[in-house]
Amino acid sequence: EVQLVESGGGLVQTGGSLRLSCVASGFAFDDYAIGWFRQAPGKEREGVSNINNSDGSSNYAGSVKGRFTISSDHAKNTVYLQMNSLKPEDTAVYYCAAVHARYYTGAIHGQVYDYWGQGTPVTVSS
Image (tube, rainbow, N blue to C red; front, side, top):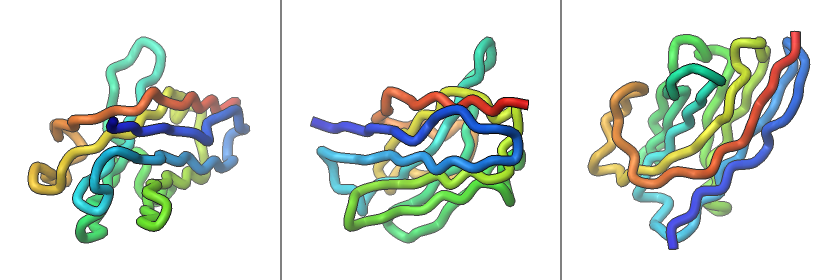
């Protein structure tokens, strides 16, 4: 059974940091790309970052570039999203998703993912 389980969300003040984790199971982690998305109340879901576990390449949305860092721990089948200098507009439910690397384009927007986690909420207070 494929599973993606996010954790690490919470309440943080403006300027603070959080590290989200996405633990994957049920598929060949090294052959997949993992993406992080977020959905704020009343807004559409948007791509935040992604990483190709087969070659380590990664991409970021412009709104988080320089503040967020995505990384993979292949021994733990886990992808992390380190979020620094958080702003109130980063408040959202954050989701991770997986797609086989053969179908991965690297695009932040428009990439189709096959598997999704349940999400972890992040609230940044002003």
